[in-house]
Image 1 (tube, helix red, strand yellow):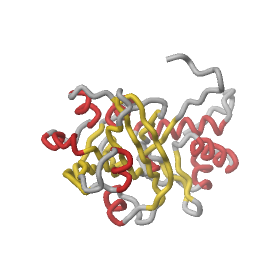
Image 2 (cartoon, one colour; image 1 turned 45 degrees about the vertical axis):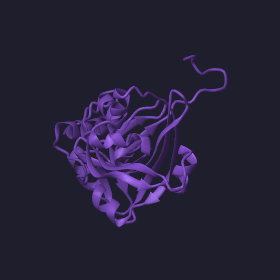
Image 3 (cartoon, helix red, strand yellow; image 1 turned 180 degrees about the horizontal axis):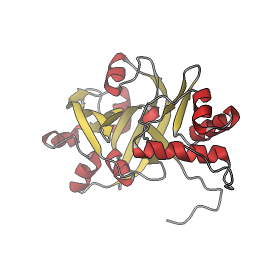
Image 4 (cartoon, helix red, strand yellow; image 1 turned 120 degrees about the horizontal axis):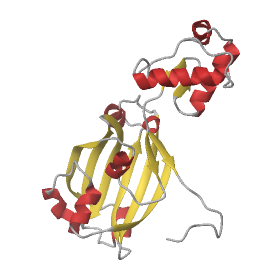
Length: 246
């Protein structure tokens, strides 16, 4: 693993590129622990300062995950979601060249909660359609999701609910044109930990979404508990007056 000491590219960047190549080839696998700094120093015949800079660069790029007192590990591939448009999980995976699948945890009519009553404009005694799913990206569990619709969408129970709900809605002539998203932190329950393959009480992202159709009516609200190690969000921001016209 000789590095070119005569090249214009700094040694730590060459080392980082070599580690990336090993990950791409499968020589280093997801969640695999990297050698200690001293071992890497001997292997690449560079100083520990160079090793440390290479590992820091890879951690900044989310290629490695550094765990205090434990070491550096190869990061799992993340699902990168662009928050600039209304886009479902399936379409997001496809845009990243990944495959979305789902396990249906439950589906049926459920008693309306206070937030359902407020958002859907229904009576307290009414029921709503609740769909709970475990969402996978390339076979890896990423989020536990609950989607709640007004009862008028109960016909969806006759559909395959393991695919894209957005596409099922589009097939019924309903187009989602606006969404409101709130993102926070929560801690894994026993069930969430089991489903997502994380320790109980591990820190997770929680997303709460409200989606609207072309008439500005609320179509559904959802809550998704997300493994942040497998998920990344990007948002494009514009200064006042610089947003491009639609």
